[in-house]
Length: 303
Image 1 (cartoon, rainbow, N blue to C red):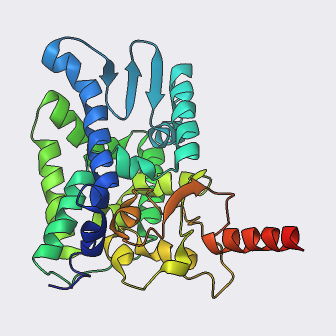
Image 2: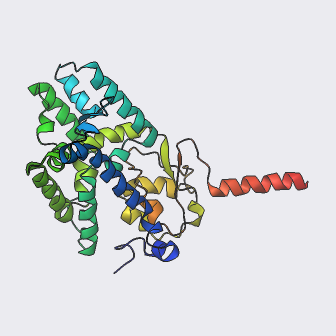
Image 3: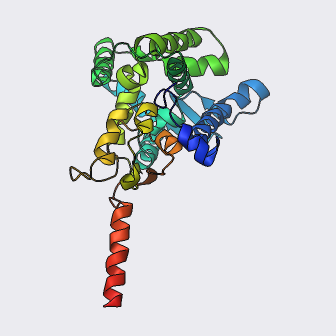
């Protein structure tokens, strides 16, 4: 069993299981927390949040709307109420701060399904499969908007696995569970991280938002990297890592600026050398830069 097949062994040995999974555990807590806000009403009769992830209102005060759904509504020619625009603006502002695809890692109920498929795929040593183009999800997003415009309806929302799974968990029903099962088997046997990484139009939309995200992962300690490849193996979007991690050779800064990054923190979890950290997009310093700066300051004082 290779280290690449089961990444994070060195991190677990160095810091313990919890430290090597701290962001994964935090994400699961966040996903359960956001879901629980919707469950208090149907289960206990005390409504905190009404609606679904598509459109909701919390404590009858705070409206939240999925901006991708609002985009579909606008292309149909339908003008939603002001609260929909307000809710979409709040959501967009949040994901501009935290990174658009943090929605995919920290909120989306489909994420645990695809993560479990990736985990099981590694344990079954399923290495081969279909590798779709990553920009296919962009074409999917454009196609969804085109179908909405042509039909005058929110056609995607009839089958959107995010909405249907959320509705199934909160209100019951089997369609959403069936969609989740299909995604699970697709990711397990057909394409690694296939749904989220290559097909999901919602992820494509939030990836575009993520290009402007302030919160970023940085390979600030990249001078310590020993090329163990654990971060590449664990990352759902491994293509985003190389420019930052190996940028010292090419003049690229240490911050991952790609909108595809989920800010999931798994690279921070599995790296035993603490190469990665969270920072903001404007912090292009590395630990080497800091040491050099400190050395120059000491030299000046000493002179």
